[in-house]
Image (tube, rainbow, N blue to C red):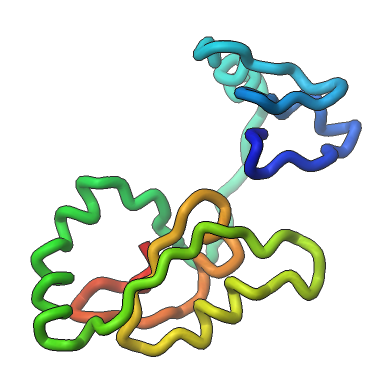
Length: 141
């Protein structure tokens, strides 16, 4: 957990998560500095998933190289007016019912929109069918 997403973990799960940076939580191991060896050791010690389940595949984590790989298509789409809006969602709806501002925003955005997301903001609508502009699927980067 970092400053963006700290919340009270279930007591039964506290041994499986870590805090870092300015954040700490009673009963949770804190990672000071950049030594993430305890996190890696815990991940390797846990059993993981016993089987894969069929479901929707969602690609996340569009780094600089991925964005640059579609830069030409984005520029062409802007020039042809296929893309007319860029929005940045840098907030988070949260888990409580009624906190769905960003999800509703993404669902109601015009079809000629690219939505860029930061941090945990995307995880409330990253699996929505947001469309395709010139082969750039989802248009939520």
